[in-house]
Amino acid sequence: MPKGRKVRVIDPKGKQVADFLAFNAVEPREFLSTGATIDNNGSLYIKVGQHLYSNLYRPMLRVTADTVGAHDLLHPPCSPAMYRCQYGITGPHPSCHENFKKALAEYGLDESCIWTPFNIFMNTRVHEDGRLEIKEPLSRAGDYIELEAMFDLIVAVTACSVEESSCNAGRCGPIKIEIY
Image 1 (cartoon, rainbow, N blue to C red):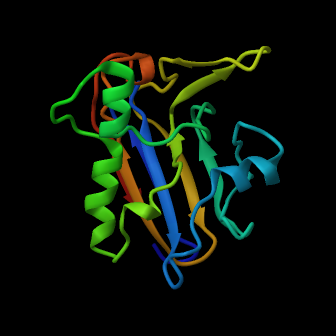
Image 2 (image 1 turned 180 degrees about the vertical axis):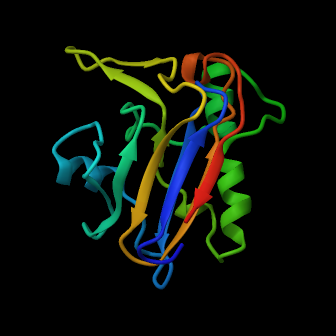
């Protein structure tokens, strides 16, 4: 995704989370850091006009539009280990981690590059006592977030495959991506 281009992540049917990773296309050791994003914005929540930051504390993507306003910067991608631990699922199950692993291999990036993603449309609430609660996404059919690249990027997006909780309202659906 070249500098200045925008990516629009769309929820066509509503209540579907999309996990989002980004890497510097020239030097992939620079990657989207949810920790640096929280630190620089001073918030667990991202708003229009703010940036998603890299691990080198450089603005990577600017939020140019957002019809939902509820996204997550805290949770790792779902994975076979998470399914075993949280749901007792030991057999094959689709996961964001495995989807990222397959997609990023094409760019010479292995699973050690899969950090905490920007979880688009994921509705995580932080209670006063520090407890986290994952609620159904607030996104409705056609809702989107739009991000502008601050430099050339490798971007990976996957529709979350957790149907065992309220993360995706107990079911999974598609995610649509537009780059312009």
